[in-house]
Amino acid sequence: MTDVVILGGGAAGLSLGVMLKSEVPEMSVTLLERSDRVGKKLATTGNGRCNITNIDLNPECYHGESAFAADILSRFGYDCQKEFFKNLGVLFTVEDGGKVYPKSLQAASVVDALRFRADELGVNTVLNSTVTEVKREGDGFAVICADKTVKSRVVVVAAGGQAGGRLGSTDGYCVLKSMGHKIERVFPSVVQLKTESSVVRQLKGVKVDAVVKARSDSKSRVEFGEVLFCDYGLSGPPILQVSRLFDGGNMVVSLDLLPDMTEYEVKEEILRRSSMFKSRVLGDLFVGMLHKRLGQVVLKCAGADLNSTCGQMTEILAVKIAKVLKSFDFKVTGNTGFENAQVTAGGAQCAQFFPSCMSKKAKGLFAVGEVLNVDGDCGGFNLAFAWGSANAAKNGIIEYLKQQN
Image (cartoon, rainbow, N blue to C red; front, side, top):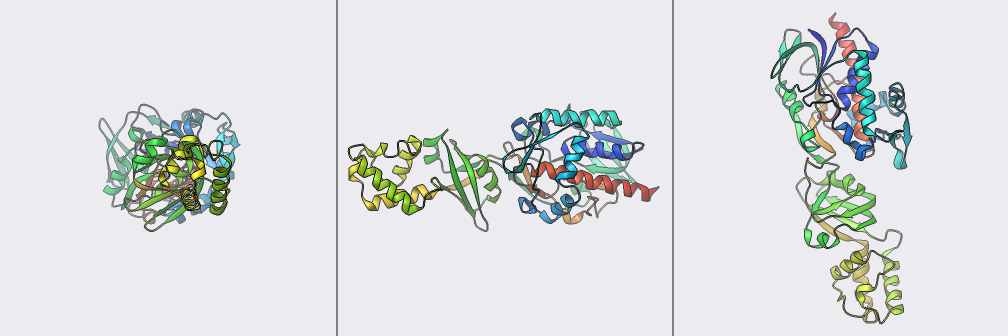
């Protein structure tokens, strides 16, 4: 019988294995990974650069059971995470918005640092091991795979969530549900949004800095950054941030394309340009001010005739165009799904776990990372929770095993 079995070799599972063996070298730790190598999903994060954490782990950047996340990170925040990775040889560099990356700017190097240390400490990593069932057996557990059964005193569910397509998993939810845990509805987050396509298709490939105002039936959110128009809808960092608001109901995304000007100032600029360029066709009104295709689509949405001349501009039309520029609205029809999502929202109800991440339903059963009902904004918050929950479980496991001896 092993002391601890960790189900999943992702960010939370790998770091937990390292933490446990670093503090209690004699502890036997087995990590079961269903894939042919550990850290596959981690290696793709941050566009391959790994946004490893954030210097400001603000609780407001967490959703689901955010109080649980706040408590976890109050015990293992940025400074602790920096020290943990420094001891693995991973140094940090900080970019805009407090986003923290490994100095190598390679997600694969973070995976390697964790993997190398796990091997050096003696974590028994078993690849190609899909867990089909976990059973209570006496004071411990029997972890059943297709080709083996592993008996353990402690089981940690670190199987991640559904985000990431083939790299995602529902295995953890199944295990926890079988042990009596409630799973809150899971849905994609930090994901591109689909909209009615007639307008966005005309703008495919265009990028613009904009204030993004999103509102659903019950919530609203404002972000700023580069928006990318796609044939299916909208993408870009601010879109990913507001995407969590879509729950299948009504949602509208409004783009302020000229956030440094008031609507009145925009109207006055339209009238000024129209007066200056009277003989130009209206379709060229915004040359030098907006992306040409974007300007023309805005004009059409305001009901303007692109073939008329700028000299035919009226104040009424200028007001309509200014309103579109300050509130370019798109009705959201969906998102691009778990295949493209960076994060899974929802998961195992945190209220059924102690602050140590040990189950209140089954002593000796722990859960960490994305499988829990906590999700963060993009910017390093989700990986920060993975490291923080692994630390909480490490302390909980050590204390639990002491009490069992």
